[in-house]
Amino acid sequence: MTPLAFKFGRYLLAAVDDEKEAISVWPVNVLKIKNIHDLSSFLKIISGKYLLAVTGGKEIKCDEQSMRRLLTIASDTQAGIIYSDFIEQKKNNFIPHPLIDYQQGSIRDDFNFGHVLLFSMAAIKTALQKYHPLPLDENVAFYDLRLKISIDHDILHVPEFLYTVPQPKATAAKKSTDQTEGHFAYVAAENFARQKKLEKVATDYLKLTGSYLRARARKAPHASERFPVEASIVIPVLNRKKTINDALRSALAQETNFNFNIIVVDNHSADGTTQIIKKMASQNPQIAQIIPERRDLGIGGCWNEAIYSPHCGRYAVQLDSDDLYSSPATLQKTVDALRKGNYAMVVGSYTIVNEQLKQISSGLIDHREWTQANGHNNLLRVNGMGAPRAFNTAIIRKIGFPNVSYGEDYAVGLRIAREYKIGRIYESLYLCRRWQDNTDAGLSVEKQNRNDFYKDKLRTIEIRARQAMNI
Image 1 (cartoon, helix red, strand yellow):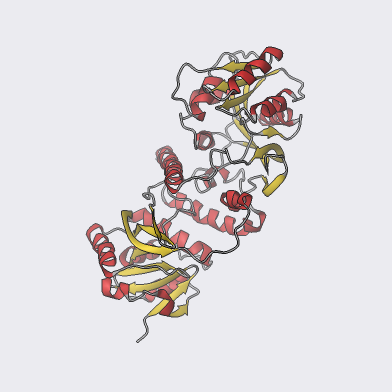
Image 2 (cartoon, one colour):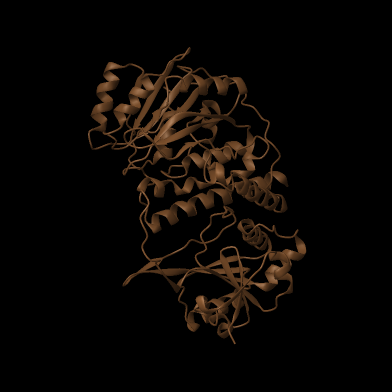
């Protein structure tokens, strides 16, 4: 008899008790498939110890021994969900694809579980009994299910390569710019409705776990200390001789009704960047060049050098060394927003451009998923806030940046949003240049894993801090 599987969203589902039943779902292309439309109703009536979920449309190869291993670990640990590393087969090459451990802060909806998940039916039944039914939307229901399971059960990563996924046949390659900007899909206008559904699921989870915070209303207190200028443009830089001149000229071109300076933290560049900055600083007294004593600083550490320096103004405003302000009015608009709202932090919007400053790919990134009512909670689900970021210096000095070169901005955004109301500007203030030397271009699986794990860790820390606030 042809084995029966059920299709919901991108997954093929099968109820199993042991490895023999589980292995019967391979190869998945010979299964008899039945579509389901209500995941909650389906899960309530099926029997079996486990629910096996396999990505549909993939020729996944998994042997009985590997499936036995997965089921044994599930039985031994009583975990709610089990997933493992896998192998990608590209022609005759077999490439390991490790995944990362799930943690409390892994609540983003794009967490990578690979292509094979094993759910405990006992954990599913508990989630369905204790919490409200799952959404009907197939793009949202599994996200809701795994968040609810995680409240009462572990989600366990098995760091072993238990199955193989052949690469699909080659298709016409997309332009590299499109590939680069895939991680901005959640801010795209066409995805707005789905994102609001995902936000609701995440917000409900935060409420269930005591991590939800009411809308923030706190404003920045009046600073008693004196500052040398009203605002400082902060530019951390390391080996950017191709772009630092453009960044500095963009900063110098700002037209304001207040005094400002430019703090360039040169992190021991060795490609001629230092000399470019030194020459421009000799011609423009607004530029303060700082070369740190320490040689172990990341981007966050360089920000600390700037904000704690005697050069720093009342407000500190971001400009990355390979980016530009979109107009001479950017700094004035940003500081006006900080003043008007008495905000601890203001975040603008930016346009993605190429090396020739032509708009590409996703275009304007304005993060309109942010709302004053819930943006500080939804930030735990998404990976960013926007740019340029600007800070009340008295407040950011109390917080400081983590000494890392990825996620440092997200860390301070989470921390400030926990306590303060954040101002937003939804017009493009900034040109974010995409080129081959970007720090997030062409990342290996291992580097992407490290980045993802770190941001999940930041979310874990933040969730626990918010839970402590609610006690």
